[in-house]
Amino acid sequence: MKLNSLNYDSLSPAQTVALQQELRKHIQIRPLYKEVKIIGSADISFNKGEETVYAGIVLFKYPELTVIGNYTAKAETKFPCISGLLAFRELPALLKVWEQIETKPDLMVLDGQGIAHERRMGIATHFGWLTDVPTIGSAKSRLAGRFIEPANEAFAQSEMTDKGEVVSIALRSKKNCNPIYISPGHHIDIEQSVEVIKNCIRGYRIPEPIRQAHNLVNEFRIKDIGSNAQQLLF
Image (cartoon, rainbow, N blue to C red; front, side, top):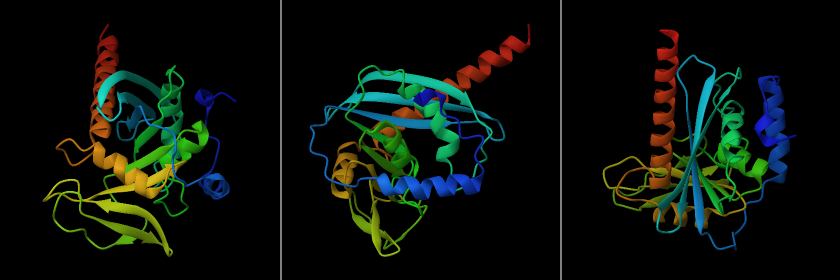
């Protein structure tokens, strides 16, 4: 099956939970030994209540973070928005973007969770398994786990644990801002994940790659909506 033909719409929520439980057995959280020269960042966007999912990936030279490519795609989905199962709604669109990229990045950073998920299968982990690429999840909010609030200074951090396992690092990327939550997805460990994200902070709360992917995909969605609306007038 080609990745861009992935369709989870036929699965029930119970079936997707069972699939996550099975897939987690194959996830590898381990040191990444290859040199990272190109990183990609991914984000999605959609209009509430609609079935179109817009996805985007931005490629950067690393560690300079010079943009070297932008890619977008959209896909239709009927899978509902359910906490902990959002990957099944978002991944088909992201994988359509992924298959456009000729030279794949050495590492992907996704706006969402890696293993900081109740079944250790956030979108970064699921994407990493499907593509066999090292992935990191950088999330703006907590999904699973408990942590002590890090000190109010840049790069203060604290471990987040769930069921006795360290699954994420709560990182204060800027003073006087809420922390972000960094977790490995696949083929990388927690320490390296945090180091990469620290290197990607450029004065904003969220890492620069995620910020640019967020801007790209929202511009794509707004442009597409405007184009479709104009077509309806004629």
